[in-house]
Image (cartoon, rainbow, N blue to C red; front, side, top):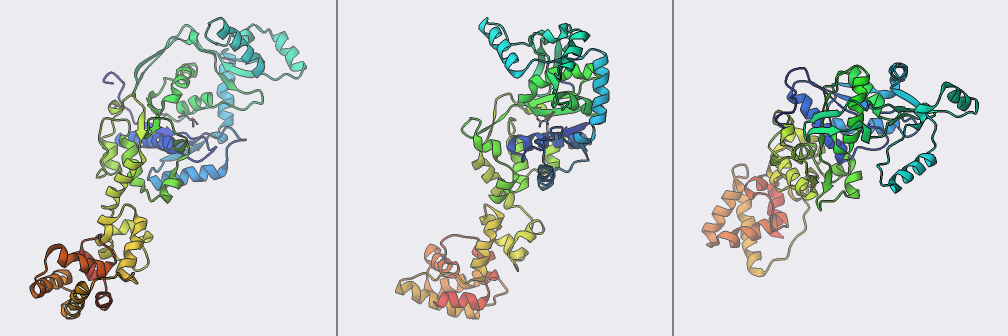
Length: 451
Ligand code: GLU
């Protein structure tokens, strides 16, 4: 949106705020990436905030996995915060809000709330919380406490302050607080729901931009008022349209597909980054762009509101293009023992994944399976073996071999090249023989031709 506030004036600070209740999936990897790209574009800071207020569901192993996944993706945080270390800060802010009457005690059970909802819906009315608890007197609260009833807390929306923001993706947003329920911010056991601690942290950590999925839009509406209640200006917000599978629906696979699986499938981090950076925009996915170039061209106004399709076939294509350009130094550790730069460069154009290098290394070093040839081809290959034993193997052996055989036999094209390739590699297709043959030991090549 051209009228959206832009992130060019003050230093940009973004955050990725996962709850460590599971592994990251493609959707939250995309959110992390958006926040990283935004920070890098503006020379700002990208924070990792572990939203672990829910002690029962948060796991340390997930925190470690989140860090490892971000590291694998190359999305290195400029700082890390943990909500579980900040409870005192939330208490303090909460006390201030309680004093101002911006949070209030409620006692309705889930069943009672459900009944109220049904009654309202039955009358054709929106199921908004009726604020009945606001009518309770101090004596009522004391009586509840004496009876052992513990309150949960709601944030009191200001009904006289329309909620508005200019969303970086969705454009001008408008919500009427009268049409919204006061959100529950704290449970009866004292634990926090995500919304208030998040707003408190966004203020305290100087977050300037919150980029997240559109499933958070209605949370944002209440958080805009929380910022105001905390005496702060809201951050800029941008809500990306949700991801769907290639078939256009939210797929179960997408909800669980994460770094672990993609990595096992041979997907390179650069491929995932290149695809996710552009998914949902009008811009083409460009495997040639590295993370810095993607950051420089990251632009919220390019994002559309239609669901973004995550197509694994497209990811595989982008991955192959990335693999074809990966330098030896980058993949060295993942190549078979003994495989050098020349071999990597020779086979690279034939790979969809780095892991397939092992198959080609086997072709180079042998042993390979011997194919059956008819008598005429057999005679030609015997002749080829004699030539191969004599040429200079260090100076373009494929050109020398085929040149000599062409002159001696009159064969050309496929009749010349295919039997040689088949005998030398055991296959019909593969890397350019000019680059492949010098990698095969001469004696081994002669043996393959002679069989
Ligand atoms: N922990 C929240 C979540 O994972 C954070 C949402 C946000 O504010 O970005 O949904």
